[in-house]
Length: 470
Image (cartoon, rainbow, N blue to C red; front, top):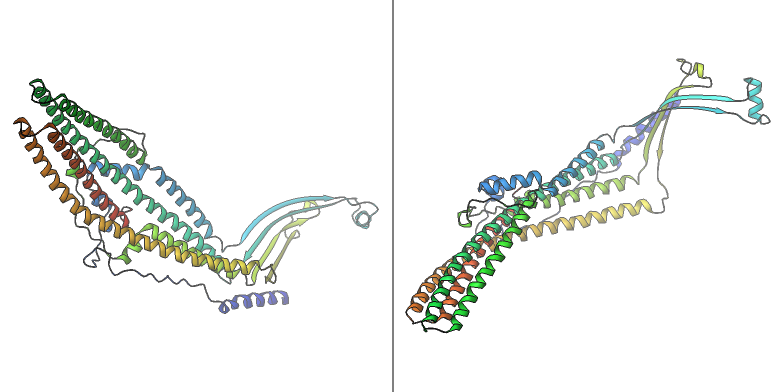
C-alpha cells in the first residue's frame, strides 16, 4: 500500500506541475493591409469572388469543360489523394493520448551446464537438467501529456490535413482559371481565323482586279506580284491559325483529363458574357478567402505547434508501463487461474539533463522556422494583394484599349472601301489597296486579341480574389 501511495503522490506532483508552464499561444502576425485595393474608387465589402464558378461563368460549353476538369483533372485528383492520406494521419493522431497495448506469447527452454550452480540446483530441486518458462501477457505503455506535447502533435496533424485541403482548393482555382483562359483563347483564334478568311476573299478580289488591269495595260506585273504575295501571306496566316486552334484544343482536352480531341463550341467571342463591373471587396476579406494564403497561415500554425513540442521535450516526462498475464514453468499448468496470474506496474519521471545541446538546438531551430513562416505568410499576403491590383489595372486599361481598337478597325475598314473605289477609278495604285487591306487585317486581329486579354484579366481578377473553388 505504501508503494502505491508513493506512486500516486508522484503522479499528482507531476500533473500539478502543468501550472508552471504556459501553453504556446498563437499570435496572428500583423498585416499591413490597405483599406481598399489600388485602382478602386471605394472600399466595397461585396466581392465577385463570393460567386460560385457556375454563377460567374454562364456559358454552358465552358461550364461543361470546367465540370469535366474538376472531376477528371489529374492534378486535382492527386491533390484529393493527398487530402485522403492526411485525413488518415489525422484520425491516427486522435489516438496519441491513449496507451499502447500489446499482447505477446513466448515459450523458452533453458539447459544450463551440469557443472554450473544453476545446473546442479535444477537437478537437486526439480530432478531435471533443463527449465521451461511459458508466458502470455498484455503489455501497456502510456505517457502523460503534462506539458501538452501530445496535444501539439495532434495540432500538427490537424494543420497538415487542413493544408492539403486548402492546397486542393488552390489547385481547383488554378484549373478553373486555366480552362476559362484556354477556352477564351480558342474563341479568339476562331475569330482571328474568321477575319483571315474574310481578308483572303478581299485579297483574292484585289488580285483578280489587278490581273485584269495588267492585261489591259493599266498596271505593271509588279502589281500582280504584290497582290499575289498579299494573298499568299493571308493563306499562310490561315494555316498558322488552324495549327494554333488544334494545339489549343489539345491543351484544353488534357486540362479536363481527356485525350486530345476537338472542342465543340457554338458561340463566338463577341457572345461571351462575364461580369463587366467587378467589385473586388476588401483586402482583409481576400486574405481569408484565398486558399494559397490560408494554406501559408496553416503552415505558420503548424510551426507554432512544433515550437510547443520542442519546448515540452525539455521538461520531465511521466511514463507508466504495466504488464500482466499468466506465467508458468510447466506447460500443463500454464493457464491455471489464479495461480499462474502475474502483474506489474512501473511509473517514473525522466528529466533530460545533458543531450549534447540537442534539445535546446531543436527549440531554437523551431522558433527560427516559425519566424521564417511568419515572413512567408506576410509575403503570400503581399503577393495576393499585388495580383489583385495587377488584374484591376489590366482590366481598366483593356477597357480603353478595346474601345480604341474598335474605333481603329472601323476607320481602316472604311479605308479599304475608299482605296478599292479609287483603285478602280485609277486614282490610287495597288500598293495603297494592299496597304489598306494589310492594316485592316492587323487591326482586326489585334482587336480580337485585346478582347481576349480583357476576358483573361477578368478571369485573373476572379482567381486573384479567391474565386473558383466554390
